[in-house]
Structure formats: structure tokens, C-alpha cells
Length: 300
Image 1 (cartoon, rainbow, N blue to C red):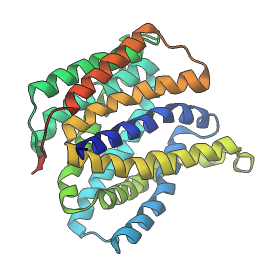
Image 2: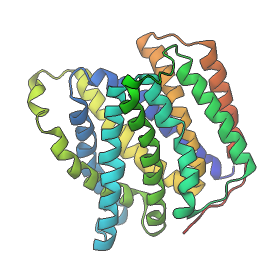
Image 3: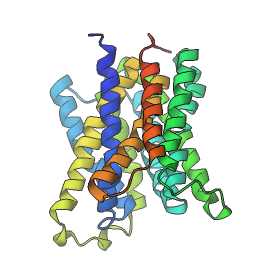
Image 4: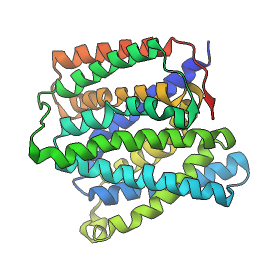
């Protein structure tokens, strides 16, 4: 079996985990302030990252020059991205946020890729990506909420669109560093820095939580976010993205909303429309078309 399928499978598995997390986090938001829950997710993951790094590689250190780069990446890709996602959901509709967060991300990754890596943008990739983007649009808007461009949602829409730009730059900025260091080492350090920068955002949120009254569901949500969606997912995604190429890998983020829809059907008894089914088929076809192309990535 060609090793590339392992990396594509890794991207799909991680995207499914992130998609399912929409439902998990929705439940957690009844107990935790969004900013505090995001902080807990990354802060509790940091010791696991460094423990794994120590066990696997024998040491955890990085040069000061690299630390500065990872601090900037953490500020942008963890602190900034999480805050932007949180407030985009607050100030616009879920359909708007989902579509603007997800759909343009791979396009920006392709546009900015020459600044960080040497990747070609072939006709197959363009066609497959376009079909997948149409599919994810059907999935998100097929739920009936619709896309609302009214002025009352403008701030949220702009923040959601900004997430795609920030996220693409964040992914690409990691690529050159992963040529020198493992995905685990890069992930551990930028998450540490991003978590530290997030501390001020949580001020005032701690006393709102009834810590003695936390239920099993709250602890399960924390576990899922920390171990599954952060420790496992970030390392696997970065490692697979490095092998496949950032442009191709980011099109697989389109699996996230599909997984979120399925989670809503299974756990929240939400409906699923024919448009969403058609969208899922289109998205799958586009991603299969992308993944069957031979592609070598060379990091600058």
C-alpha cells in the first residue's frame, strides 16, 4: 500500500474528530465560558506534549531563535485563531461562521504557499478543490439556516473570514520548521506559547464556574478536547500535512463540517437534508480526486 494513503487517512480522522468536537464543545459551553474552555483545552494539553516529547526524543529544548518564531506562531495560530473563532460564532450565525471559517481556508493556503514552501497548484488540485468546496457549501447551508449578509452580522462575518487567512498562514508557517524539528516538538512549543498569551483573556471567567459541581459530561468534554482534539490531533495533522503538502492537506478540513452534521444527527437528533447528502458526495469526490494525484512537497 502506498504510504500516502496513511497520511490522507490521518487528515480525515483528525477532521472527523474536530467535527465531532462541535457537539462536545456545545455541551461544555453550558458550564464554561468559551475563552476559559479554550484555555483549559490547551493548558492541560501542554504537559502531555512535553512528556511525549521527552520520552520520544530525549530532550525538549529549542534554540532561542526558533523559540521566538514559535512564540509568534503560537500567538497567531493558537491565541489569535481561537479568539477569532470564538467571537465569529458569537457575532454571526453558525452557518455564516462555518462557511467563512472553512471554505476559503484551503484557497488562502494555496495563495500563500509560495511564501513558505515549494508546492505546485495543478489542474487536478484546482478541480478537486472546487468540487469539494461546492460540496462543503451544500453541507453547511443545506441545514436550513442559510447565509445571512445583513449588516448586523458584518463583524462576525469579517472575523470568520479572517480565521481562514490566519489559519492558512499558521499552517504554512509551521512547514519550514518541521523540516528541522518533529511535528511533536513544533506543536508542543507553539501551543505552550499560545496558551501563555491566552491567560489574560480568561480573567473574570474562573469565578463563573461551579468547580465543585462539575459533572461527568464536563470532565469527558475536557478529556476529549485535551487528549483527542489537541494532543493527538495536532501532532497527527502536522505530521500528515508535512508529508502531503499544506495546500492539499487543508482541503481535507472540509470533512470537519460534514462530521459536525453527523454528530448533530446522532447525538442531538438534528435533521439532515438531501442537499447535505449531495454536498457530502461532492466533497468526498473532490477529495478523492485530489488524493489520487502524485505530489511531492519541497519545503523552502
